[in-house]
Image 1: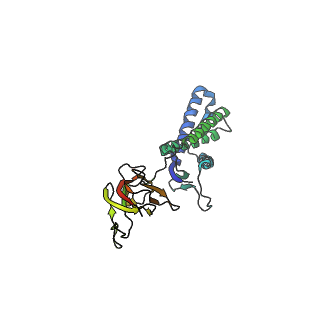
Image 2 (image 1 turned 90 degrees about the horizontal axis):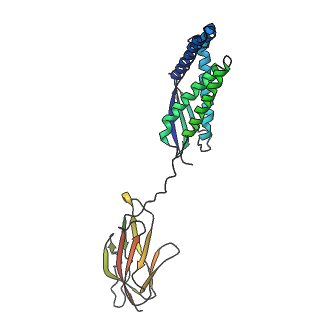
Image 3 (image 1 turned 90 degrees about the vertical axis):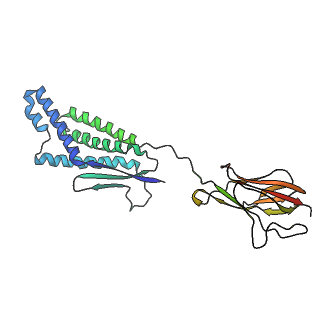
Length: 286
């Protein structure tokens, strides 16, 4: 399965600072609403005390791991256990860089959204934990917010539509006449040491002589954009019934003389009207 890596960062200090700000605001509101509850409100405000910092540190990493567990639903691995498609690079400055291997069609426009909602999910989850044993109403409120954040994170994993298959079509055809030895009254088309080469989009009316009932392979080479080898989408048609064309078992075009006379043979690309070659054929009796 085709995949790619996306990367985003979560800054621990900013997340914890947001948690402290939210608990401070809620504490101030609680004190204003109930002056008798100032002690409880004070202690619910996350501060710089050592035990507060330890609780916040624990809450941050616990919920970071919870986030990573949720992201695992969208990992794309190749079955190689030595390759971890979800990498958490925790740097010394408290920045967590998350590298996630995802489906190649993941919409990159959502990477920034994913980063923001990931931080928000950790913040709300930490606040839910913070109030869990002291204020059930606030704990439930932040639990609901964290669930909404997680839903938004899941929605960021949106795939772009499948890409239409692309093929390298010919931009140039070069026709090579086969070497036809001289025969009675017919000088042939080329000597044994030289081939007559016809370039793309050219007409060549010096007839290619074959006899009725004879078959001869039509030889050509193709070039694609940048000189690369394209797919062979060449078709062949004759202007009348003096000769016919057919494919052999190897996919080569064969020219067969059907009746004495002359005709014009055209090779053309099915996907590029500007790629063609024409040549005249003279069919003679045995």
